[in-house]
Amino acid sequence: MRRIGIVVGAVSLFVTVSATASVAAPALDPAGTSTRDVIEVQHAAPSRPLLAVSHRGAAGHAPENTLAALDAAHELGAATVEIDIQRTADNQIVLLHDTTLARTTDVETVFPDRSPYLVGDFTLKEIQRLDAGSWFAPSFTGETVPTFDEALDRLEQLDLNLFLEVKEPTLYPGIERAVAEELIGRRTWLEHNPPWKPRKLIVQSFDWDSVRRSKSLLPAVPHALLGRVPEGRIAEFSWAHMINPNHTTIDAAYVDRVHEAGLEIMPYTVNDRARMDHVLRLGVDGFITDFPDTGRRAIADFTRGRDAIERAATAVPAQVRY
Image 1 (spheres, rainbow, N blue to C red):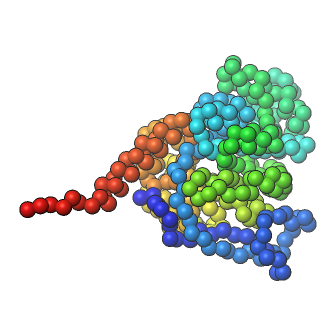
Image 2 (image 1 turned 90 degrees about the vertical axis):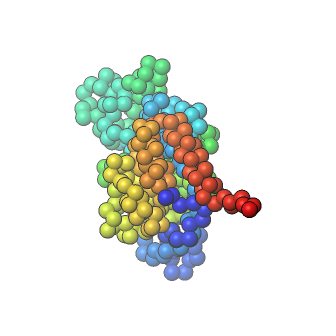
Image 3 (image 1 turned 90 degrees about the horizontal axis):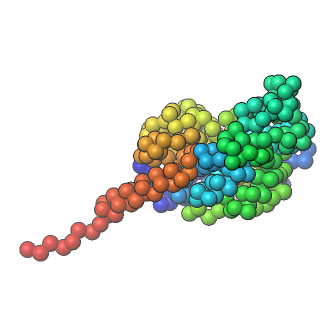
């Protein structure tokens, strides 16, 4: 059963402080190294609304990781979107899922002799020449690969929350610091939504060492581990806020184990309505989907059913006259 109301268990939020400094807003260590201690602050974990996170913008409705996909997510009523980022040859951060440009752009036509078309082999100017929309549908012809900066601008305009996935960080040493610098330069992303709303920002990756590095740079920002953390290792990651595994790898016992550790769980990528209903019954806090419209309907139906059961269970029986 998913937690309802205020959870009495504690979630771990790590902040970093020097021996003489007090806990303050997150800041980068300009030297690139740190001797600061990590301290653990315990706080109660409120129950946030169930959430259908719109995957790669809204990948079921528009070309993934484009501004058009962010617009589509907003139009479909999504509260939160997930995007993927990588780094170009000239150290610019762009929205792309694959480590190559071949699947989602016309790079093979524009640059026929640049195989294997790795993102990190192209400059931003070169990538901006590519069509990132026509592969999805002719109506999106001319859609470009946006920069992280452009995506944040659009997200702010649309008032959307963000799950930010750092893709293959081992290919881009230092990308965690570049991301942190961008976010710290936009202080709104370091602010927290109230506990009855979805989280403003989650930074996540399949590379758990990268997630830990990011957390050390952005201690006030919630972070998530992508993939299924073995039950015996969950306690190692008390500094995280979420574990987000593939939906095919979990059951109710695993969801309970994550919750017992004080963490949230939002599996990916749940596109079938029946599977949405299934993971909701397992007790997850939400899920990631290409189809946020379907996800919102599934959550609305589940919530109505759950609330009806709770009302029936707590109803005071009418007095019986004899």
